[in-house]
Amino acid sequence: MSRRILKNGLLATVAVFAFLPTAGAATASAATPVPAPQGIVQYYNYTTLPAPAGHRLHTYRTVGRVTTHRVRLNVRSGPSTRYRVVSHRHNNRLVALSCKTYGGSVRGNHTWYRLPHHKGYVSAHYVRVGHAVPWC
Image (cartoon, rainbow, N blue to C red; front, side, top):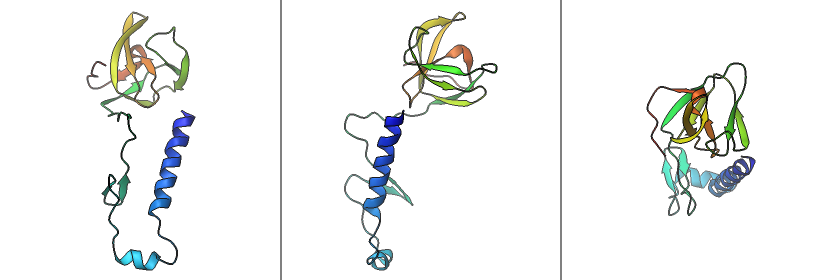
C-alpha cells in the first residue's frame, strides 16, 4: 500500500511541476492557454494522465458497510481465512467493492468481496451491500 502511495504521489508531483510555469513566464502564459501534450486529457481544471502500459483501471461498482461488532475486519490476500491478513477495516465504515467470488467458509457463508485498491478480500458475512455485486 505504501509503495502505491509513493508511486502515485511521485506521479502527481511530476505532473504538477510539468504544468507549472516559470516565474518569468507566469504573466505571459496566463493570457494565452497552452495546449496539453499528446495523450493527456484536460477537463476543466483537472488533468488526467494516461494509465501506464499493462495497468488495469478499476471501476467502483458498489459500496458496502462493515458490520463487525467492536472489532476490525481483516482484509486478506485471498478469498479464505487461510490467506494472510494484509490490512484491516473498522466497524461501520464504508468499503469499495469491485466483485465477489467463491472462497472459504465464514460461519457458513462462502462469498468473498474483492477490494479494488488493495487487491484484498473481505468476507461477505461481515459486509452489507445495498446493490448486487458482480462475480469476478
